[in-house]
Length: 86
Image 1 (cartoon, one colour):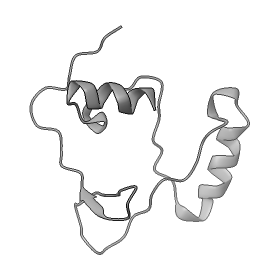
Image 2: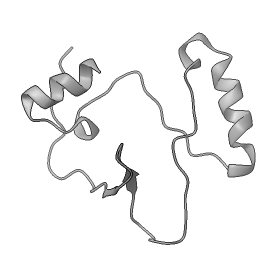
Image 3: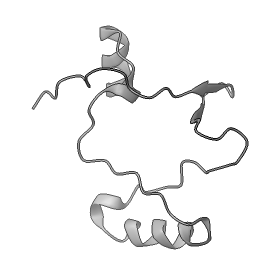
Image 4: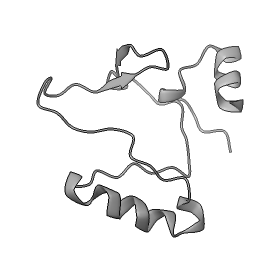
């Protein structure tokens, strides 16, 4: 919620803001549950979860399902990523 609020105030899209300390792993679907369980065994991975899947419906496209159930295309970042504030 704090990230959402800050992005709304600043007019930023949180999908395009640097986010250190996060990882996305692409795993064979047959072993995804096992991978999540292994990650959850580490204190920094206790909130690990499966957040998506690959389909052949739209090759080369990434879609996000929104909170209200619609779909949003996630475009490739153009230009420079926002500077890190650390």
